[in-house]
Length: 466
Image 1: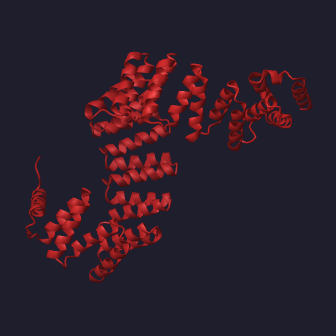
Image 2: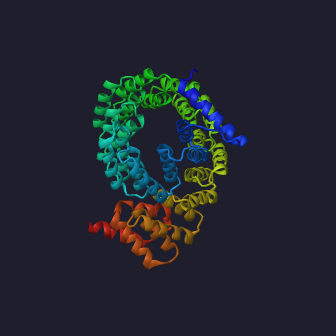
């Protein structure tokens, strides 16, 4: 790889600087060299080395304006905002028309959540700058902090008018369009942008995603193809194209695109998983399972991989193997709600009711408050004749789902079983009032309660009154 003269000079300066740090022999650098060294370290996130370079730079060049600006940047990064502000005020007296002072002052306001003040300062900086692209992008970010998406979008667009290769701003423009749910407008903007920059793989990629949102899948495929033509190593475009081909049930072509991503870079668990799904759709079960296994080998923490394997055996009615793999998944991540729900469902199918109840209980403890989770646990507890626990479970579920007939009928049956007749009749009446058609819940779960003459009479009278 060839380096420009500047790159060579920068590398020599960095090598010389780091050698000096190792030997403790103080060497002289001109201020431009220090600026280059500091900029290199800041861009690479090496803050400790940047701070050393600033310190030594200011010792050798105590009047350097730019080195002091770097010092401000470090102060802001370390949240030493008062120190940054004091130094900026001094620098402002020296160069009141330096846009970097406005940028850093705006950064301080932003850090203090005074975003409108930051915007006002950045607008002043635009008046004195020759290159406003970065400033428009910064204003856009401040509007994002204020959830002012329309204003943010407008400023990112202005940034791109001055620098159409600022892809961060391009992503932010589309982000704003998405939040505003203006997908047709986003497509229109991207098409205009592509007239100016027709080989921009990022724009084609984003255009394809907008078409997917609008379910214009053929247009999405075309956009992703152009993204690949613009950059045939663009992994994101192959992945998105694969997903669209899946929706179109063109599974062989989807597999081909996912395979290309595996050849371009290290295998990703997402691509391996999607290949497995495609093979399963093609009824090639051995290959599907092979790729599911590869998925969890690549990323043992990917819950979708373990769930795919478990569901594969579930569909095959091989519940013992399904239970084996969901147990492995739980051993890796015992806080995953999806694992515990599958664990409960599989144990229920195997008629391991106590284990199934524990699975639903753990799901609830982890915050899965879906109605079915409460009801499945209640039904198992009723089956196990643990009526008090079932009653407590249903009372808790009623806090999340008040006035729900599924809960009311179950509470009625349980209170009859526990001889709490007043509560039983109240809940039965509630259930009938909410949905009289679902009284069969009592018949299925509490047949001996349903057979009572008093219960039959209440149901008959209610239906007759409607």
